[in-house]
Image 1 (cartoon, rainbow, N blue to C red):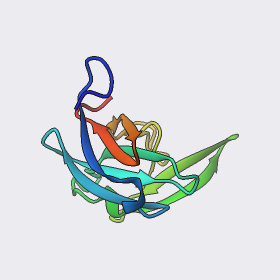
Image 2 (image 1 turned 90 degrees about the horizontal axis):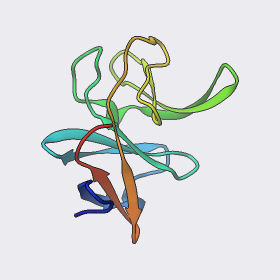
Image 3 (image 1 turned 180 degrees about the vertical axis):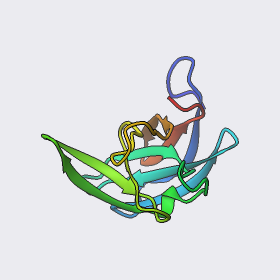
Length: 119
């Protein structure tokens, strides 16, 4: 499905299928992708692999919001070692040298579509 010129998006689920401050896992372009819904209702996606444990578990992490410096950040905390990852950028809030690939998300007619390639 082409949601934008040159980009391929995969339908994942209905927005309502993702609990507020929860996550689901989807197979997108052969990769396990963690798709999250924030408290504000925004839907965001990161690679599901925790770079610290190498386990595919981020969708089962704790979703929350933290103030980091002077900005408010939506994050997921890995269920393995509790490192927090910014849902908008994939940056680890606990180790600036680590990031998780993020994926573009579109919502069309209440359905979540995730881009096949990480950005």
